[in-house]
Length: 200
Image (cartoon, rainbow, N blue to C red; front, side):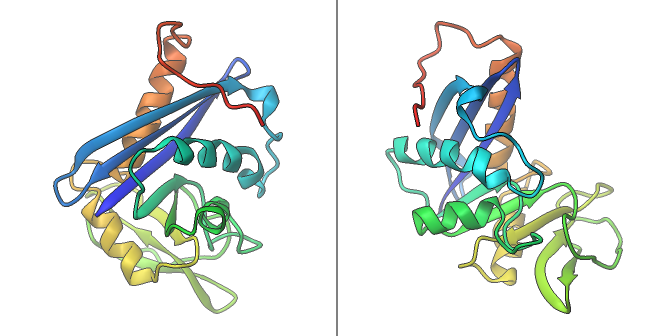
């Protein structure tokens, strides 16, 4: 299975988006793409409307991939959102590719606490409906909150997320994208980097 992880970091009015495509079950990296732009060119952040800020940046990166992913991970929510329309839903609607939102905290709904051991989980419930999963991917760590962009069922989210977190708490492609975007910001966006500018 070909799985992509896309994330963005921001500092000093600079936004860097990184996408990493990996092949599973090998976990090998197929390709990476980077987009750097002024944060002023993005929609301002509004709580609950992250997809307006990061959505276009993510789509731009996806359009640069030479390999079409079968599943996409984004750092944000999917159906586990007050409106049911989180970042993962936006990306899936635009690309028609199954997308999984992965977040640190619950945005809406609740779940029953459980032993924090790898593989243990609980459903995130909102208005008597299961909208996501709180999944522990590593022993003695807080669970990640994962939810679908629409196409994938909760059992599929569980399986895909566990298969991509064998060495990391976050899904490996998303972990790499996050790490790379932060590293580039720390290096103050080296001019020697081969990058492309996104112009909406």
